[in-house]
Amino acid sequence: MSKLMFTAALLLVSSSTRGRGGTAAFQLYRRSSSTASAFVNARTTHHQRLSPGIIPKSTASSTSSPLSASLRDLLEGGSTRSSSSMTKAADEAKSPPAQAAAAAVENVVETTLPIKETPTQPVKKSTSNSIISISDSFDSGNGEFVSFNIADGEEDYTDVIVHVNIKADPFTDLEQKSHFQSFSFRSSVNFNSPAIRGIFSDKKSIKVKYVVDNANEASYADAWNGASIFVTEKSTPYDADSWHRTSDTNYEKGVLSWTHVHDLDGESSSAYFAYFPPYSYERHLGLIAQCAESEGARVFSLGQTVSGREIDCVKVGTGPRKCWIIHRQHPGESMASFYAEGLLNRLLALDDKWDNVSEKARELFTFYIVPNINPDGSANGYLRTNAAGSNLNREWCPSPSPPSADGSSASEMYEAPTLHRSPEVYYLLQHMDESG
Ligand SMILES: [Zn+2]
Image (cartoon, rainbow, N blue to C red):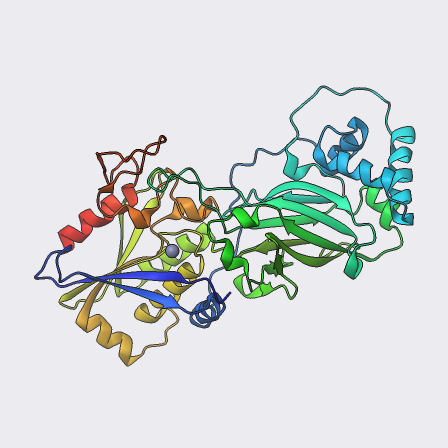
């Protein structure tokens, strides 16, 4: 991950006697030379205090079970990309597993269900294939099922190949593009499906190769070079310490891939994969509640985000110098949330470990710490933007408008921040002006 530089936290320090925007205000970008070391850094500062949990986003999944969906897939013969690719693989391949797959398909059709058209319902692609289900309907999830096929004579004994896409952020007007790069999704093996029993009946596990089809169109495709995708087999993706890096992530000729061995006998048949381990909104709220209970802090909301979440700010210290520390303008950088947790933990001695450095810092500064200025983008699994498609890092002041579609440069300025497009920055600057 050595190519990817990122901003873990943006510090804005201003003296109480001079206003922002002048020479007194300066920005200090905390950077890490590698994302790997940044994550280790975050892990060393965070303590396992908050119970992990899942806050599902509104789930618009099909009402049918994965099994019935898979049967329908098989029956409808090409109504989804998964079934067509599977049937094709079964027909064309000559390997015994593929023949078994074909037999399994015929078996299902002939013996278990009447041949009858069911009313056509839109079946969500990501939940409707017979061997692997891909889902991103959870806090911070992002990943879309594209297709799968039975591997035929693959190198390294891969059994199944699954193709996924990363979903793009809302369109960003100022940059005239839709960003994407970060992802996290769950992959489940439907080990009871007839197809998998037909093909892999003699196996205790299957090796799945994951391929991100649109990796080369990502905002920073170069960052895939040397990347290692994270994986956890826990039932929740929010147990940060359970994540580890895959050992065989590969980015070649614009294609990002890695493999994972799924057990077929139950316990660890499903796994989560992510560019970086997510930090849940529930954990954020828990941290804020802990700070609110701490004697040394005052918690208040700067205002609300586009989607109506509070923009929480923690005021710490009594010193004459004002120091604003904000995190996660870019929601894809979840390590900044772990950093914020470590910072608050130390400054407020949330773990009852008092130290002189924190005490001195609280004497010298009044800190305004915003653990997450973009909770909407974080929960939505975005890379760079808030819910309105604004890249908050570009919303601090007006800038020249982007060229119009015909290539001519516009004369008007791009107004920023605005309550409509970037309330997160708008409110933050308002409070910064008030605090001095
Ligand atoms: Zn950034």
